[in-house]
Image (tube, rainbow over all chains, first blue to last red; front, top):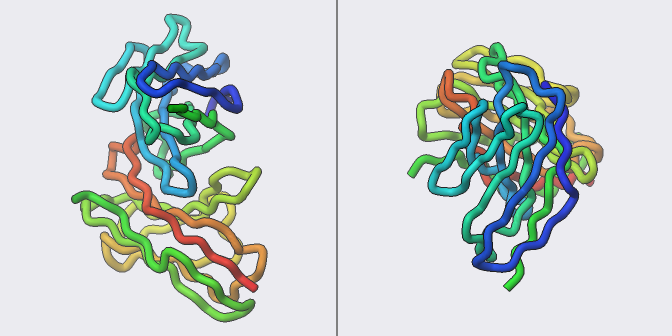
Length: 113
Length: 113
């Protein structure tokens, strides 16, 4: 699975958009970009995933660059409850029999009032 | 409500005293997995199961056992706990072919004295 690089921490004002970058310059053509988050000591929570097209769901938007070497997770209107560690994970969709997720260090997003 | 439950949520025990952490999901998922999370090491997979009676080792299986006798349950067994197994444990599940959307339990915090 491709390695990802994320900033250690970011701040965002409540109500503003939070843009979390992820670099995955060694991504392969069959690897997807997944985003999860973990609110302090709770179980990780799936947010969104994509291959090459931009994706949007009720939680967030995912923007993937045309060369797929980087992506940005956008939380359009951050709230205090969005304070969490956000993980960018790159892996193949059909990874054999083990759906293991490899979590890096992630980005600690702090949403301030 | 779709969920993964773990019990107990908190446990303090002593070295060598066998314990079981239960994991149950109500989504009829085929895939289930156990992770441990330690400061600076992130989440590491212990064991996983693709279906009933099908289990396999993850990255850090030493000192742990699992069983999958029923589809909904995937208990983690520590036959002889040691202090280095003090950790935060998470169970996860997903449907076959939908690996990107993994559901995680709330976590079990274990302290082995």
